[in-house]
Image (cartoon, rainbow, N blue to C red; front, side, top):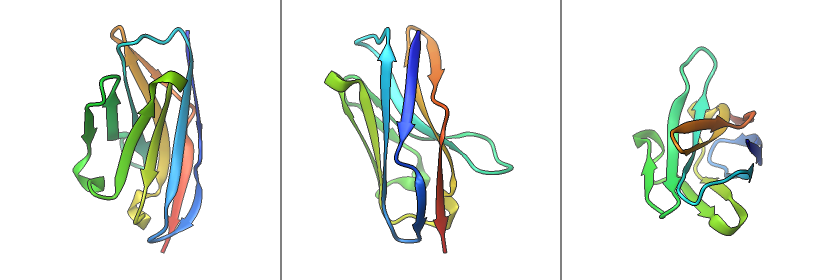
Length: 115
């Protein structure tokens, strides 16, 4: 089994920054993709960014240039540095891990950006 624990969400003013962390534990494969998704009220969950165990990254167009995903493979942890935050970035952010064709999700962390 795999567990994902997120931290780092909160309330920030527009233009501010937050850093999210997601620590994975359990049976973690060396070949995996970890990432972040978000879901705003009344909207579908959407991709924010992903990073493979080999370091290949993928970003949603809406956050390119503002958010950076990184990982520490030794700690099985993925980070999301969010800069220049906008009110439209307000959402619950979910950590995701994909390995061996299975999807795992964290419990989510709220990010609220005030204008």
